[in-house]
Image (cartoon, rainbow, N blue to C red):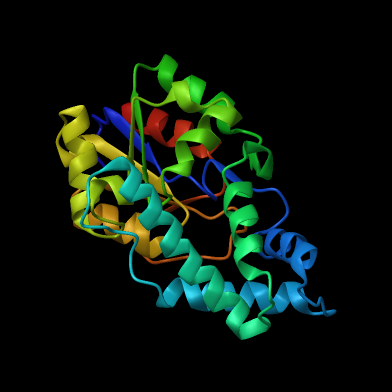
Length: 241
C-alpha cells in the first residue's frame, strides 16, 4: 500500500450501518400486514430468495439523468427484485400496497443501525485531515438514511450507482469518485464488505482495497482483511510509520 493515502472511501450498507434485524425479517414483517401467509421457515425462504433475486438482477444503472426519472427507475428496479422474491416464496393479492410500504421503510433511518464504531472512526479519520467518500450501489434513498443516522456531514462526497450510471465492481464508478476528490487512484483506499464489488472493483480501478469481514468468514489470498472499522485507523497509522 502507498504511504500517501489522501482519501478513504467506504461502502455504505453492511459497512457503515446495517438493517435493524435483517432484510428478510423486514420483508416478512411488512408482508404479513398485507396478506402474506407466514410459515415457520418464511424468514429463511425469503432470505434465500432475496439472495438469488439480487444475484440475477441487472446492475442498478439507468440511461437517464433527470432526478424524478432516476427515482422512478430505482423504484422499478427494486419492485422487480421484491416481486421475484415473493413469486418464489408465495405471492399475495395486496403485493403492490406491500411494496409501497416496504420500499419507504428502507428509506426510514429507524430501519437501520450504525455499527458501534462507525461515528467515532469517521470523526478520527476527519481529524487526521483525510477526505472521506462513499462509493455504493445503494440508491438515492441513501442520502435520507445518512442524514437520519447523523453521518451525512462526515463525508465530502457520495457516489451512488444510479447517479454515476455505473455500479460496482465496474471501474467507472470508482474513477468518478476519484475525480470528485482530484486524487490519483493510488492515493485512495476503499473499504467494503464485498470481495467482488469492493475489493476486486477497487483494485481494477487502481485503488487500494480492504475487505471488511465482521464475522471472520472470508480469507481471500493476498487481501487485507479487517474485522471492524477501528482497524482502518490502525492500518493507516502503520502506513505512516
